[in-house]
Every structure is written in C-alpha cells, then in structure tokens.
Length: 266
Image (cartoon, rainbow, N blue to C red):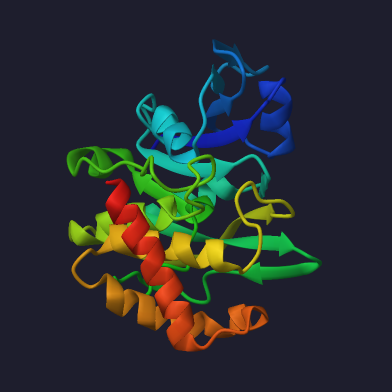
C-alpha cells in the first residue's frame, strides 16, 4: 500500500527542508504557488522516498490540491498544508486503519490543532461520517483511496478556499461530493499530525463578509435546500456573531444575500 502526502504551500524555497520540517517519511508531492513556475524532482538520501516539487504561477488552494492529486500514483493520498508536523508513525497508523476498514473509500484522521494557545481535536471516536455530521472536518484530516476518487470524478472546488475570494469551503464541498456518491467514509480518532494554525489567508473575523461567504458555500452545496442549511448554521453557530449585534433572522438574511450574490455571478 503506497502512501503519498500532497502538500499545498506558498512561496517555498526549499522542498527538502519543508519535507523535514513536516516530519515526513513517505513519498510527497509539494505544490508551491509563487510568482514563477518550476518543476523539480528530488531524492532524499534513501532512494525509496522521492519529493516531487512543483511551483506554479497561480492562486487557489483547490487548484493546488488538484494539481498534486492529478500527478499522484499512490494507493492512498494524504492531504496536507505546510503548517503540519506529522507524528513519527503516521504511515503505519494510516496503513493499519485502511486494513481494518477495508471497505472505506476515505478515512478522516484526528489532528491536534494549535491556535491562540489552545489545542483542539476533531475526532472524538471512530465512527461513520454521514451527510449530517461532515462539515466539521478540514482537508488536513483527509486521506483517501486515489482510485475511488478518480472513479467518481471528484475534485476540489476552484470557487472556494484560500486564494479564491470566497473564503473557506473547498473541504466541505469535496466531502459533500464524496458522500453524495454513496462512498464510505470513516472518522478515525488516531492522531496523525499537529497543525499549527496561527495564521489564515482568508479569515478576517466573524463578520458580515464571513456570513456572506458561508451563504455562498451552502448555496453551492445544495441549491434546493440551502435555506435550511442557512437556518441550521444560524441556530448552531449564531453565538459566534454576537459582536455584530444582529438577531438570528438578520444573520440569516446576510447569509441569504451572500447566496444570492454567488448565484448571480454564476
């Protein structure tokens, strides 16, 4: 079972150093977005591991992830950002989990997220991921069988995520597409990495822009029932926006405005 880590980064000048900083020990494809283009294939001191580094003059995290995925030849793809540090035995953890859950098309693993002096985890217990509980998982938790994703013609959205102007959401859209195709997804509580999430290229606070971007995302996820998705978000997460001094209905209207703007652009 061949594993390959697909790393999205910006303005990287040393692929080997990034590989070491992330504590990787499997094959890796590093997709770097900068002001120039370059392709580099490098070998570490041991021949069994290769780093394929690509620099593209482009923006967008979805584009970055797709660029890496389309070049992978691995059995299992592991999605990563450059602010991650993997645990020493991450490859063994992932391989053992896929042996245990042999019917899985995709496994979501636990990571420790370090932010503002706090550490949070995303997976509390091993469980099946369903359409009603999938939105809490980010791309840095994703691993999947490459052939399963290719067979169902799934890719990361180019309309959402860092660098697109629409905030986050490429992860939710990807996982939503996977579940709509009736593919089997499990969340695994085993930790494979630490994520040092101290900066964001898109998050500027829980403001009206954030709400509009969420409205656009929910419209893209499900055009038929997106208004229900807006209401469930306002009910569950409305307290995050208390600084705006808005009622739940006003928060809903702002999100709906974002969905309408997105629809008009299309």
